[in-house]
Amino acid sequence: MIVNVVEYTIRELTMKIIFLGPPGAGKGTQSEFICRDYGVVQLSTGDILRANRKAGTELGRKAQEYMDKGELVPDSLIIDMIKEELKKPELANGYILDGFPRTVAQAEALDKLLTEMSDKLDTTLVLEVDNEELIKRLTARRVDRKTGKSYHLIFNPPPEGADVDLYQRDDDKEETVRNRLKVYEAQTFPLIEYYSAKNMAERVNGLGKIDEIYGEIKKILDKYKK
Ligand code: ADP
Ligand code: ADP
Image (cartoon, rainbow, N blue to C red; front, side, top):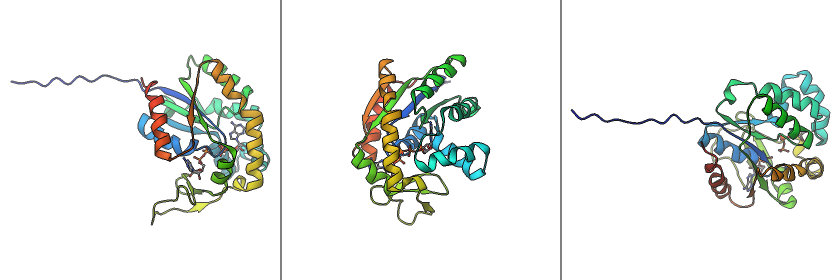
C-alpha cells in the first residue's frame, strides 16, 4: 500500500504592520490587497470614526467637529478607542493599522500598549506621494456606501456595470484636503523619523499603477511573512 504522507506546517500568521502616508496616498486601496493575500485585518481609525458618527455615539459626536475641519481628533480619544480595538479576537492573526498612529504621542502610546500585551510590530510601510498628486486623488475620490471601498472618478473607476452607490466624503473637498495635507506634514510626517530610528520604516513609492505599487509592497512584506 502506498501512503502519501503530507506534511503540514502550522504557520502562525501574525504579521502586524503600520501603514503610514499622507491622505490619498493609497493606503486603503493597497490594504485591501494586503488583507486578501496575507490574512490580516485592516484597522482604519478613519473608518471606525465615521461608523461612530453614523451611529451617533458619544465618540462620533466628539470627533465630528475635528474631522469636518480636517484636523486631528484629540489623542486621548483615539488612544482609548485603539485600546479597545486591539483587544478584539479577530486581530489575533495580524493586522494593518491604517491611519493610526498619526502623532508621536499616539505612537508612544501604541508602543506602551503593545509592551503591556507582550506584543510587537513587524514594520511600518511608508507610502510616498507628492502633494500635487494627492490633491488630484482626493478631490475625485468616491467611496462606495455598500462596501466602503474607495474609487477614483478617473484613475480608478468602478468596473462597468458594477453595483455601487458612490458618495464623496465631506472632507474630500479641496479646501479641507489642503488643510489635511498641512496637518499631515506638521503632525504625522515626524513619525517617519520616529520609526526610521527604530529601523522600522520601509519606504514605497506610491506613484504609478496600483498593481505595480502592490508588487513593491509584496516584496517588502514577504520578508516579514512568518
Ligand atoms: P488613503 O487611504 O491613503 O487616504 P485611498 O486608498 O483612498 O487613500 O486612495 C485615494 C484615492 O486615490 C482614491 O480615489 C483611489 O482610488 C486613488 N488611488 C489609489 N491608488 C492610486 C494610484 N496608484 N494611482 C492613482 N490613483 C490612486
Ligand atoms: P485619510 O487617510 O484619507 O486622511 P482617514 O479616513 O484616515 O483619512 O481620516 C479621516 C479623519 O479622521 C482625519 O482627518 C481625522 O480627523 C480623523 N482621524 C482618523 N484617524 C485619526 C488618528 N489616528 N488621530 C486623529 N484623528 C484621526
